[in-house]
Image (tube, rainbow, N blue to C red; front, side):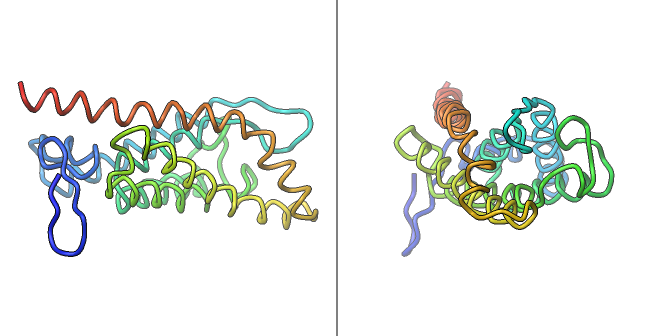
Amino acid sequence: MTISGSATTLSGPYGARVLADVVVRRSSSGTLARDAAAVVTAAGFVGLLAQIVIHLPFTPVPVTGQTLGVVLAGSALGSRRAAAAMMLYVGCGLAGLPWFQSHTSGWQATDGGYLLGFIVAATLCGWLAERGGDRNLVTSVPSMLIGDAVLFAIAVPWLAVDLHVGLGRAFALGCTPFLAGEAVKVACAAGLLPASWRILGLTEHR
């Protein structure tokens, strides 16, 4: 870890600020190509997790693996690549690539608030990771929770407008049923990232 000037710059194994930096710097291809590959891979990862779907009888919003992919990929990529990855995921899905939930695409396939929330949440998680938010459980859990909270803060009001219901009803339909599942996803992501940093640190010193 190095501290320079008035801002804190964290560097881990191989001088990396986020996990994706390790892959980018160890690759033999150019920086732009490496960044592009990381962005496309992250978008595909979220698209893959979107196919994990559980429909609940009391809400039109299904349980999916997308939010796990969003906070995990966002933290691993850093803010700029995370934003690019989620914009690629959303843009391609809206354009017709069937990688939204249950191999669907287009605006009719999902709620726009969640899509916008994915972009903002991933970018925020990436920004926090650049400042060490993914290095240990003490910081990674709050970072992931903040990303999740922002996602639902965007998605719930949008859902209220779409369904023509009040915020309370929208919260009950679009957030409350998923809180337990989100806690499990955050725990998985928050444990995986610090573990990856530890493994990379051990590798660096071999």
